[in-house]
Length: 456
Image 1 (spheres, rainbow, N blue to C red):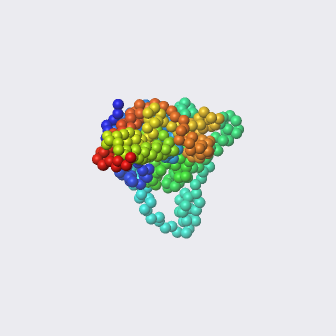
Image 2 (image 1 turned 120 degrees about the vertical axis):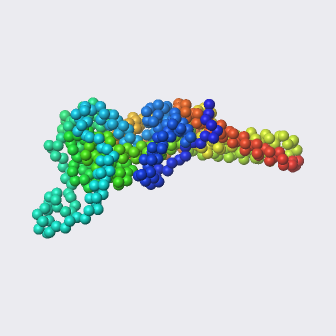
Image 3 (image 1 turned 90 degrees about the vertical axis):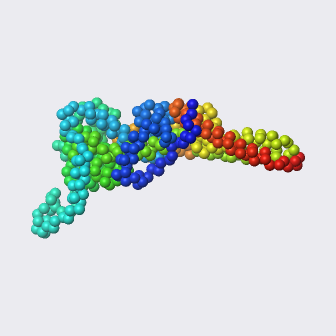
């Protein structure tokens, strides 16, 4: 079974976020949510929708793991998905807290956000009042002194964040692995790591002109501090692509509460990027069943077959053979044009005939000696507080570069398990076949109408 012959695969979406401003983006996001039920019109069937992939309702190569690998190795922007998965888990854990703990972190409403933004804008435009030299000398070194403030990054030993039940139960799945605090080395590592996160978070609040440090009694405050240092602070390991206005708004919210609604602005931006940019590009990329050398080889094979068809038609036309024999050239034209059209859309008809696909470069060496190290690197991509997402040092990069071209063209294959993806590829193949038949019919009509040469 195939889709409509008018089916078109998802168009490539530019990753530039400057195409929409902050007011237009939520509107487009809401429209994309409302139109998610008719994903086939955009080239994405409901079986491959964003929510279905995130919820684990798809098979390889369309799983959440494949989506993450695409963002790491192709788009080079996995931080949006990493933050999105963390926030979804964080919202669930926050809702499971006792009522007395949730009351410590009130909900951050849209009205509160607008009021905070207006206050920040008013304070930024306010002209500082001039003070006398005697008054300036009196307040020198205090918080009331004019001029740049000095940020104190040392931790206060009396401000120990309280642990919540979720910290004890779910800490292993949401926080980075820490050494055993019972040993002196492990305790030193934990303290230095916490101090580093606190320092980065303090710098982020200072850059947003926030004078007060966040409340430490609120639940998950330490985890939120790590998120600020990992995703929201400037030059952080997984810095999100946020505007200055969005960054300031979320920091103002996190200054007051650790409620999940404090991330509303960032959540809208990241989810819009995932749904409207990354997801269509992922489906478009997944439709391609061959690597780049194989697709280029298929295009060359299609062009060669078409040229051979023209050569056969010319030789038959110049001979004494009856006109009907000229139609035999259509065999080469049909095969060549169908191969060329499919390859132009990233598909190899030979692989499609078996419903196979090439293994990705990072999948080829899972069975080699370096598999354990690469497996650890793949697991770290789902760690909410991991390091940067650079992959240049992974072992497979050097191994794949040494692979010769012929071996890349005929690389290892694997069966495509996702039925919806196979259905899309079947549709593209039928479209290519129909286009080849139409083009071949035109070529045959032209050559049959031409008088014979009768040269031999």
